[in-house]
Length: 447
Image 1: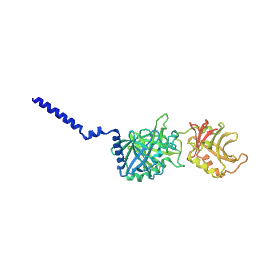
Image 2: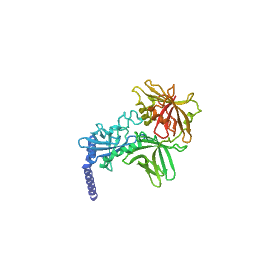
Image 3: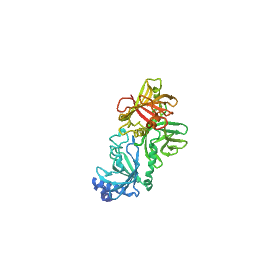
Image 4: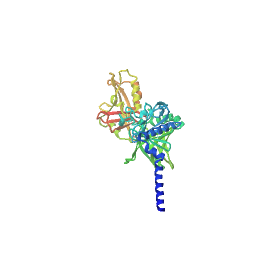
């Protein structure tokens, strides 16, 4: 009888446990909620989160780390579906107000429904590189909600499903955002800044140099080793702070990861410092990191060689420097409205010697600057020296309106000459003529 009683009590206990489990409030909520109810709960959760931070949220948005850097955005969400937003996309770091919505679909998403700073990254007609024509900066304005972690809101982007995290902003973040602008301008450079950049890596005993090709609009650079026989190279994404740049992935030197590059105004360099003498430095240089012997084919005694800048095709070339354009525009500004420089053509070793021909639109006759050539073989530069000016019929005084432009060609420090590995519009080889002391660079066809 005792065994039967024990069995009966065990059965009653089991039934009680099952009934207790079935009446659990938490379990009821889990099993009773349908998908729409769960989404609505997530919607409320996200909206409450967005409104919970007194100073709003901060996100450094990397749209594609294989070719683009990061843009800092600040958001202050308001109860009425409005959002105050600022970014360092350009020099407008002021606060702009627009609309946002937390929407339901297959998942919950944050959508910036009216135009604001973040939309600048999603405009297809606003692109930083030739590879992104028609694609823009690959950004989004809709972000799928994936929960929270350590006080951060986790999103994934609509276009390429990349993770984006919102962290709680501080009042100082809003104050500091405009301070990013001078840093961005420093690394982008001015019209007169040197055209070339180097990355120097110091492991405490040895310095390695890399050619650093940087696109300031894309906030992305590529470092390529200058060591003979080396094919080492890597990409670097940039985002900015009031004191410098954050580089991803970090530059690894002797096991140390260097990612915070501080701007040093005195030397106009960006420096990341480790321990034991380890450092990485981004600096400007007037000398191309890789020098060529292409200048030699233009020297006296060589066959005739002609290169020409054609304004209609080469004014906008990426290798034509802003400083060259400034000088061209300055000369054109002195001419009648229907006249402008159409060509700057350099003829080497012709029957008439070596000379620059300035051609014009609007019926203005050509002007010729006769020169002699020499070289600095140590620096691998071509030196053009003034001889005389003529108009094709007689000698003339030096034209005043060409003074600044022409002075770049006759700079006694010389010019770097490089045959480029690309063509522009036509199949003609492209040569660049670059000053060894200024940011002057002219793009030409071999004619």
